[in-house]
Image (cartoon, rainbow, N blue to C red; front, top):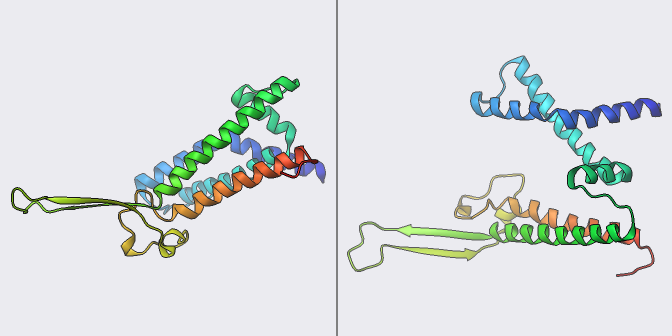
Length: 192
């Protein structure tokens, strides 16, 4: 049974590695021809959905399997941890990358709260202002916390769609929690 599961896991990872063109083709056909109407388009769409599920399994594998994670980092970034000096360099790079991605996500979070409205009146007489530009921050639980439904009609004018707020906030909290969890597991004697 364990051997069969290992083969299924290997097939899932191979599909993630080599199956991405299916998702691209499905997306292009969806944009070009609309929703699937024929059997082969439905099968292509199902294969794209299976790719998304397999990609989630691949991410879990990278988190859980240390050897696979090390090989992936060696291929992607050229990072190989051999001695303590290399581990220190890798740790500093990981902290810097975490802070960079968190700062970028905080900027996106603020942009999901930022509203921009331009009111223009071309018929205004000469010498008077033709329009106004207002920029502000606005939080509305009906807009920002509506990830699974459409935002209210009053939610126009946001720089980023308000529904991105909970997604970005979840990413920020997940990164902070995972960094704390993995660093505490590595150094079990520390409380902070």
